[in-house]
Length: 423
Image 1 (cartoon, rainbow, N blue to C red):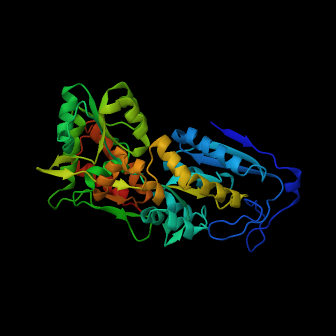
Image 2 (tube, rainbow, N blue to C red):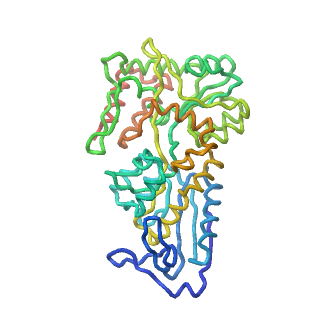
Image 3 (cartoon, rainbow, N blue to C red):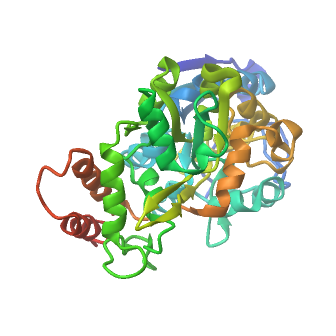
């Protein structure tokens, strides 16, 4: 869905123009002599409409429309705004943008693991008011938005990780410590506990705290991975066996985010692994029975293994090819401001990267944020190359289907790892 806004510039303001950059490239500027937080002066805006396309998650449409309304009201009379909002998955933003950089969104939301690719492709320039953003945001969020200590994006959230949602009508505080116990309870009641195995982002939870390793090589492109290791206290086949047992359990369901939300609403799912972006929806569905906690442990190789997780951050980028980069930067700054991060938490339950907002009583009291903080001890920043995703999905599809190929678990693991580490 697209939504367009129009604000018409009085004739008086159409008479002036500005030049930005040492090469004299013409750009629209946010205001007449206004000073950004780093002290940069902007001269008067150029003539002609300021057309901006904004990409954001479909689930954020209501929120972003409100933010865009307030942005246009704040700068009313300073430009002829024509702002278009388009839903775009944050996890696939980079692919969509790089396919046509010059005609891509001017302002876009994306997950922090895409930052290196966006910078390498020339889609992002260094942020000009970097010091003000560093001072306003959590250090981890700033680091996630930086390459070699240079800030390239605007921190938006500090909650792009996952944890356990559970319905208190079915599980006690002791029950949620064990994934296997939760599966049994759900299965006995004809319900499900869900986890998405179609995405390696979640599958990492089962491998990440076992001593088996995964990461990005020094080239910043290829991966290293030992998930098929045949030595050590926990071998690759031990995890694969545990997954095979889970896949067969009547209380287990592998489903994507939409399936999780649907199951929560219709009552078929009574617990599941997901992120803070679903907190409002889950709490509305479960009411007083709503619960959130760190991930449980699961049985593997005769021991209990605490599930790991990827931590992450959502960022706002400004397209380096935008013909209105100054206005796009001002809009990015507006979307990620303290006030709008507060609004994002209120409307979407998403954890802020802004220090003041994150320290507020309301945020600190959020069960979802508390669960993320508890899980953070077992999480790490996602930094992996693009070859990771498809091999993991192929592996889990085989496990979920009951291994129709008839290959040994070691063969399946070897195939997956060969794909993950491929150049």
